[in-house]
Amino acid sequence: MTRILFFGDVVGKPGLEILAQELPALRRLHRPDFVVVNGENLDVTLPELGKAGMRPESLRALLALGVDAVTGGNHSFDPPWAEEVLGHARVVRPLNFSRHAPGKGSLLLRKGGKELLVVNLAGRSALAHAGDPVEAFEGVLHGWQGAPILVDFHSESVFEKLGFAYLFDGQVAAVLGTHTHVATQDARILPQGTGYVSDVGMVGADGGFQGYHPDFLVEAIRRRLPPKGLRLRPAEGPGRISYVFLELKGPRAQGILHVSEVVDLPGGNTSAAPQEGEAQEGQEGNV
Ligand SMILES: [Fe+2]
Ligand SMILES: [Fe+2]
Image (cartoon, rainbow, N blue to C red; front, side):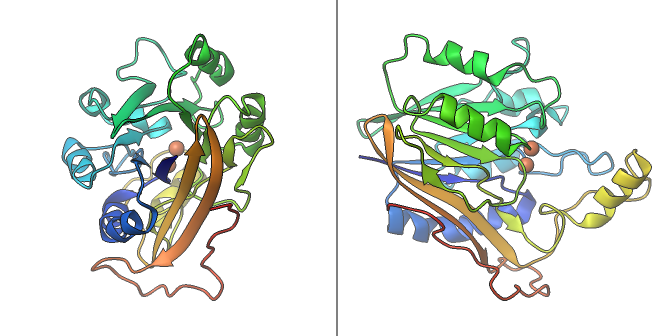
C-alpha cells in the first residue's frame, strides 16, 4: 500500500503558511509515504505584470516542510529566474512543453522501499504553447513497468482532464487536475483503477479571485494589459486548504479522499468570514 498526499496550487505566502500550519496534523492522520504539492503560484514574482511562479527561497521553505515533489503549470515559466528553480531535483514542470525549455516533466521518487513516478502535464487551455499531452505521456508509458504513476494534469478544461484519465484508466494510479484553483466535487476511482478529480483546488487565502486580490486581475481583463499602478497580490482571509489523499495498491488506486475546507489563516486577516456551508469535506472516497 502506498499513501500519497497531494495539495493543489499553493498561492503565495498565505498558501505556504497554511500548508506549514496544517501539514503536521495531516501527516499524523494519513501517514503519507509521499507528499506532492503544486507550487506554480508559490510567489507573485513580477507583481506589476501579474506573474507567478516560484522564488528559490520559497521553494526552499516548501521543501523544508518535507515535500517530496513540487509540480507546476503555466506559471512555471513566468519569472526570469525560472531556470534556477526548474533545475532543482524535486521540481517538475509540464512535460509536454518545448524540449529546449529548462527543467523536467517527470520525477521518480523512492522512499522507504516505495516508489512513485510523478508526471506533470498541461492542457493548451492553460499553457498555449503546450504540445499534445497524450503523445507526451505515451512516451513515458512506452516500456514502463516500474513505479505507480501520479499525473498532475494542469488544465482549465474538465473535458481534457477527464478524457485523459479515461484514456489511461488502469495504466496510471491517479490523474489529479490543477490550475483552476476551484475544487470540483467529482473525486472517484475510474473502472480500471485510476483515481481522478477534475480539480483539487487551491491552498491559499479564500477571500478573492483564485487566491488573489481581485483588483489587478479585473482591471487586466478590462484593459487587456497589466493595469498601471496596481500589483498582483494574495487575497485576504479566510484560508482554504485543498488536497487529495490516495491509497494505492500496486499501480492502481484503492481509495481517494478529496478535501477542500476553510481553515484559519496563520496570523492573517480573517475578516471575510467563511460562508455557511462553505467547507466541503470527504466528497468521495473509499478511504
Ligand atoms: Fe495555479
Ligand atoms: Fe495554472
